[in-house]
Each structure stands twice: as C-alpha cells, then as structure tokens.
Image (cartoon, rainbow, N blue to C red; front, side, top):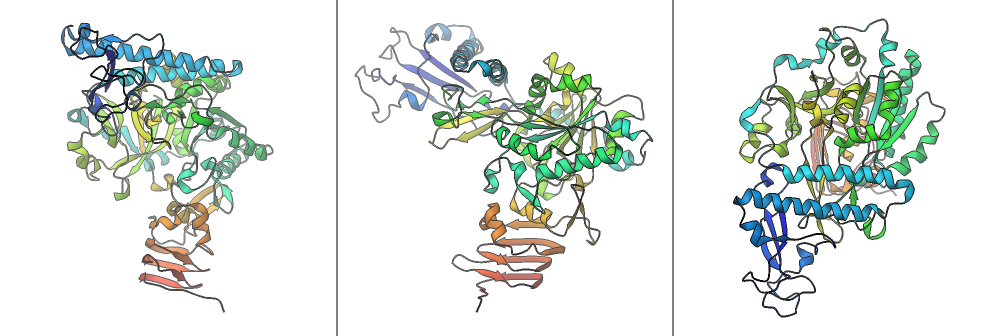
Length: 582
C-alpha cells in the first residue's frame, strides 16, 4: 500500500491551493497480511484552509476533515507537486516519488520524537526508531504476494526428522559439557489481559500456585543440579512486562540459575490512513499510552544483539539458544535434540532447528514448514492467497505446524545480524485504540527467519512438547490430574489410557482467571474425559468427575450447579439446577 500526500499547484483546475490529495495505492496490499487498508481517493481541505469551492469552512457533509485522513505535512517536510509527478513516465515513477516523500515525512516525525528522549535513554531509543524506520521502508517497498503459491512444495523427507530417530541415538557420556553450550531464552513480552489479568502473563499461577516463570526456573535449576552445569535463563521482556518481571526476579536469587533480561524494541504505532506515527514523544503515559507496541518476537535477533548479551554468551563459550514462548509448558530443554545439534551424525551442524508437530483440526491455522526456492520456509496462513486457504488448512497435505520451539546458533545470529541478512515477512496487525483511532503495527515472527540460516532442520516432536496456555480452557487442562508435576515439568499422567489431550471449551463466563477459579470449588477428575463443553452460568462442586463427552449448557437466566461428588459420563446437562445450603 502507498499513501500519497501532496498538493496541487494553483494552476490545477481544483480550487484551493492547499487541497490535499490522499491516495492509497493498493497494488501492494495483497502482499500484506490482514485486511486491505482501503481504497481511497479523496480530496480534502486542510483543517484551517478553505473548502473545495474556496470558502472557509470545515466539517461540511461530503468534505472529510484532514484529521480523518492524514495529518498536515510536518513542518519542514516538502509536498509533492502532483502535476510534475503525473507527467513522469508511468505510475511506477510516480509511486516512487510518493514513497520517498512519505519516508521523508516519517523520518522527520521520528527525529522529532527522538529529541524528546532523556539523555540516558537516547541511544537505546535511537536504535529502536532506526529499527522501525528499516521495517517501515520494507513495508513500503514490498509488492505482490509474499509467497508464490506455485513455488510451494512439500519439504524433502530428510529436512524434517522424526523425533524418535533423534532420540534413538541416545546421549553421550559428556552430556554435561554439551549442556554448558546452551542458553535458554523465554519470550516474555505478553500481558495476561486476554485472561483478565493485569501485568505479565508469566506471573499467572498455573499449577499448585506456581507461575509460568516459577516452573521455568524450576526446570532449569533441576538441569543445573542434576548435571552440575551452568545453563542460564534469559527473558526477552517488553516495555509492558519489564518492570513487573524484574521485581519478581529477586525471589530467585538463591536458585541455581543465572537469570538475565533484555527488552525487545519499542516501535511507534502508525495511523492506518496517514501512515505517520501517532506518538508525540517517547513517553508511554497519558495520551501516549497506546502509541507504542512491542513489534513481535521476530525482534529477538536485533534486540538480543543490541543488548550485548549475544557477544557475552559467545565469549563464555555458549553456542546455541533454545527459544520458546513462556506460556508453552511443554517447551522444556530436550537433551536429545541438543545432542543432535552439537554432535550431528553427518558432521554438519544445523544453524536453525524448528520443532514441529502433527496438526489436529484445532491447529489448521498454524504456520507450516514448506520447501520454497530450495530452502525451508515457514508459511503462515496470512501469507496464503485466498484461493488456496482451504488447501493450506488441509491436514492431509500440510500435516505439521510450528510449535515456536526453536534452537538457533548464536554464531549464525551474530553473522546474519551484522550482515543485515535476516529476512522475515512483515505482519501487518490492525488495531483500534480506545479513542477509536485505527492504527497498524508492523511485526515479525521469530520462526520466519528460518530461510536465512544455513542447514536448517525441522524435527517432528511429540504433541507433549506443545502445551500452550492461551485461555482458561487450557488452564483447566494443566491444573487437572491429567498431568503430574515434577521439577517444573508437566507430564501426562500414566493413569490416562489414551495419550491424547481432551478437547475443552469453556464459555465466556470462564474467560477471566478470577471468574474461572470462582466457578470451581476444586478441579474435576478428568482422567477419562474426551470432550467438555460448558456454556453459561455453571459452577462445579468439590470432587466432580468428568468422563467421556460432557456438555453443560445453562441458558440465559438459568444457572447450573454441579453438585459435589457428581460423576458425569457421556452426559448433556441443560436447564436449571441449583444446590442450596440449608
């Protein structure tokens, strides 16, 4: 998409020299995920200028105020003489002129924002804004679909190895020295707002009052104690989670884990129509509260490098990072995968390993590994042309999806970062701010960089290594007796006859963690459960047992109290059921 902001010279047969032309050129919108950003050709007067007939007025029906389309050009920024631009050879030259003008406008705006940075934050802010400007430049340059569907092929068989084959190699006697080459990185930038919680999501209690962060520290401490190693934990925070996370870290001072943190970048959100930053200064309070965003976990490469930790760990002899989402409770350090990286059977080390697992019907939208122009490439559903979306969702054709458990060479990250050679597709994420302003934020995903690394590999791992907690439905599963907890790691109970995880769907009354906990006096026995759907005002007493398929629906205005000790097996419960104390 291109936005044109320009002025007609007075000779143009549209009255009013200050008429602004806002033109969205949409040739490139198909390349970008998310909805089209509009097809708009409007002539609008400046807010303090004259109407199209030359009279001084504003807000007249049919005349759109410039605030609704774009800001007046920042001071010192030139505008485009459209009569000259249109006389150039073809639309491509015209688009290039406009693109350059827009980039100049954004550059000026970013420079203004930078001048408001405190001295101690200046360099860090400058790196963030420079990173955003590069991403914005790419956003304007890219045209056409980001993938050519005709070039997508199934990966060669040897490029995705079954985990069983990796595990069959066993472990060497020197596994401790292999572990000492590893750094564990957890993506910790997200808030718990989708589950009704304030602060970092990693601080939500998920099992026996242990938080995601507690379990992660316990896992790594267990490794270090068992093998007498020094595996550090690194948290990639965002400006949303950094302060609260650092306060909590003090409780781990006596644990046998060195914990480091660094912040991912802070980028300005941009007005969806003008494509100019909505931030007025570097602060993120007051009117600037919603002006900034963390630009997705693909930012890890630049932020890790800029933090200095990358060079520090290389200097200490570390060779690989294991990256995963902190809310994926299945993403523990796997010694067999690590050994495969450090001691490859063919003698050639992989720079990038992505753990994938078999799709179920619940995973049809997950990104999948493909072969594209001779290299492994992660393809997300947002990149798929509409005509091929059903094909992409096909479990028979694309059988695996990305778990976002990644093993990456530190030396390769350093090399590629210094060569500016890490290529990730841009994700355009539209948002509406509280005040109603439509904005977009430009993001990248960490796994998309796989194509930039040499000798990349996929490993098809068991489903147990993908146990994300995104909703209270997921939370119910991990809090139940389906799983046992040992040294921070959750494993499926041996008492469950089938290794598959039940399908659980809790209704909107359970969305917030606080409401969810209030509706369960204790977590039900779910060892023999296959499918649970709960909708409406429903509560569960103590020691309830759920087996087979259970559907509980309280219609609007009704309430269902499942009594203590109840055993529901292949039951549908509806209507109104109240248990009253007397």
